[in-house]
Amino acid sequence: MMQILLIESDDSLRSILKLNIMKTIGSDVIEKKNAMDAISLLEILPNIDLVICREQIGLEKTGFRLANFFETERHSTPLLVIGKKISEYQHLVVIDKDQSWQNIITSAGSILGVDVVFDDNKLTNEYVPVGIEYFFNITSTSMGCDVFIRVKKGEDFQYIKRLHSTDDFTREDIEKYRTGGLKEFYISKEHFSQFVNFVTSQITLKLEDKKLSNTDRITMTGEAYAITLDRIQSMGVDEHTIEIVEESIKSMQTLMGENNALASFLQSLRANKLSYAYSHSYLCSLILHKVVTSFDWQTSQIKDKLTFIAFFHDISLKENCMRYSSDAEVANSNLSNEDKKIVLSHANLSAAIVDKFPNAPQGIGAILKEHHGSKNGIGFSESLSIAISPISMMFIVVEHFVDEFLKIDGPPKAQDFEKIFEILTPKYNKVTYEQTLVALQNMTLNKKKPVS
Ligand SMILES: [Fe+2]
Ligand SMILES: [Fe+2]
Image (cartoon, rainbow, N blue to C red; front, side):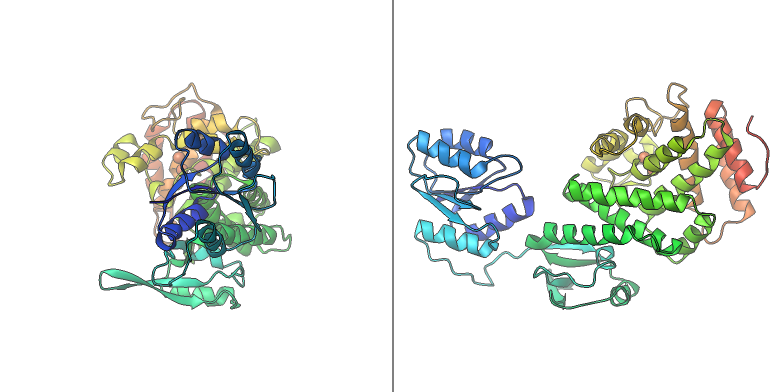
């Protein structure tokens, strides 16, 4: 069987190329993510029939390194480079970088002497789900990306086209789908990263609009938050992730300064417009900003830090992993073992993520690490540690309050708060923990008692 070595860093493009090469050319495909790994393989497996790579992957001159390797080692392996001509290597074929994956496969086929026929039934056009919130802030998908819904047909799923790539649509059109209970659309896997980047830049632009009303800003920051969580899970932190997060945090900071921030939030919450993840982060931020005014160490820098902490503390978690607050709850949950591990180390993981953001205030990582009370960022501490920073102590009490607050059904009543404090008061009985609790009580019961 023929063997093709495919070097491509984009996971979704690599997998679509691999699957369709196997189906149309019928060769085996070995995948590598960069030239260095590919060359180590070629050293032990020199009889590869074709190597496909980009001219450049990140900072690496992938095409050049491979051509150079073949020349020095006197190989005659055909090399298909996507991009510019980078070498005089005799067996080099170059195709333009903006080729569709079908054209890349056709070129690969002609090098190998195989006539490639794209039979629609044979193609693997895998679909991936994208949350409906991706569609609220765009009016077309562009880029040839059709949009489908998935329906169950017997044992299988069928994908039915709902929006053509050339269609224009409005937020109201998409709202209708949500009202009908739709949570996600599907797009073809090959369009995924391009589509997500497109939506990210559109929503980032919208958040920059100074004239947004508070309710619109809350909703839109919530949609941006969902996209950020998804991006971090599927694509990691890149320049688009950094841009959308910076704009979201600015937006949150604008909202924190508004007098009616809580009322607008509750209004959007009741209209079911906000995800749990975002409500949790937003409310933590809002309450931290209020509570901190009772402490004499409040400064505008501290307030900025609090927004970052609230935004990032659970950023490493998927939405279904967010409602756990003890090691025992995690152990007894029906999460997969992989997810259990992630939940238990999420404080550490979130700290590692925030480190990738160049404009995050100093020291945020350390606070995120201890946001469940353990210094090493693993698990949920049962006891009140006094070895952690006062901001972390304050966060722990506020987060607990928010967790309980979000369990309230309907508009919160005085008894609801009494119940919350029945849970919190015996637990938080020393140093900053206790001071935060008192500040929270004063705030919710509208008393002006000083924090002692
Ligand atoms: Fe949390
Ligand atoms: Fe957490």
